[in-house]
Length: 359
Ligand code: SF4
Image 1 (cartoon, rainbow, N blue to C red):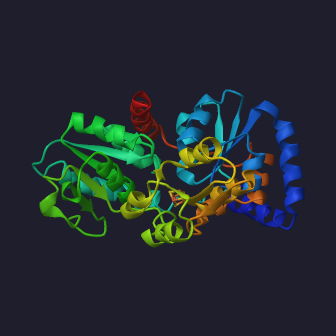
Image 2: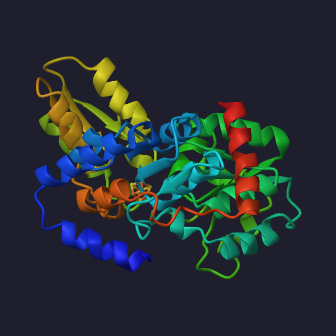
Image 3: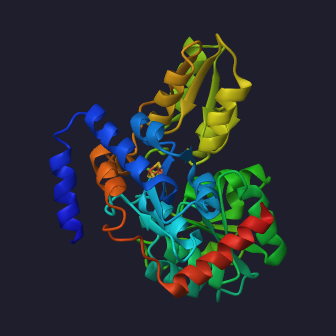
């Protein structure tokens, strides 16, 4: 049975109510017992998070996937690169299933391997100091493998500064993929300025900044997260004006002026923990990240004002519906597995292991 068959099954199931779907998912989970585990990203809708065995950001979920020794099936409710990371880390006898193989991350898809190789050809031969490729966790398996193969590594939004330092010790320059904003924010955190940066724009034949590549400390791939790019300085100024006591928390994929104006900056998991552990009843907290996380935190902490900085939904995360999850949980043995070829898996693991050593 091919993907179209299962898509049709999910379409039929979408006629059921959420309660009926949840009842079926719970029943299927019980049937599979320890043989199945559902991992859900924090940007998933609330009911999916509630039915999952583990929730977290992409890094935490990769660690959960690697540590899952229960059994055969890992159902990953998130975008495709996350399911790929789980497949890279899973044991050979385990099968990772993605409820919607079409749900990719637009930012990860902005760095395609042939274009990255073209950029590398120029950057690694431009006469500047040695350049080390570093990719953000939010990238495809191909790009992670590329970094592994070229003595580079992977970083998360929490350890990007540490990773940049590691890369500077090995060469004079960093080639950072695929998020320009996280790269710029990390460089600024380390005391670098805009003069130390150059941009590689994949839409331009020569990258667009040719005269700058040899001397720049960091070359940033021109990619962005459409969800976090939407936040603006005006959003923060609005909060400052009308809620002067409020704290503003944002994700480092936001533009640099938003990050500079915020009170706290950190990963999705950092934001979740900050609200859980550092805030108290009566506090006012405005959050600049994906709306489902904000809404889930609102529901969890009704005794404080947890509000969005701006409404910003990740459309591809939202493509994972309860109906699709239900099909995946009922038939993980029949659905196609998330496949990563052996060479890609090997080099991506090399890069991931370097990252884990650094963590
Ligand atoms: S929130 Fe941004 S980085 Fe995360 S999956 Fe959506 S588009 Fe990709």
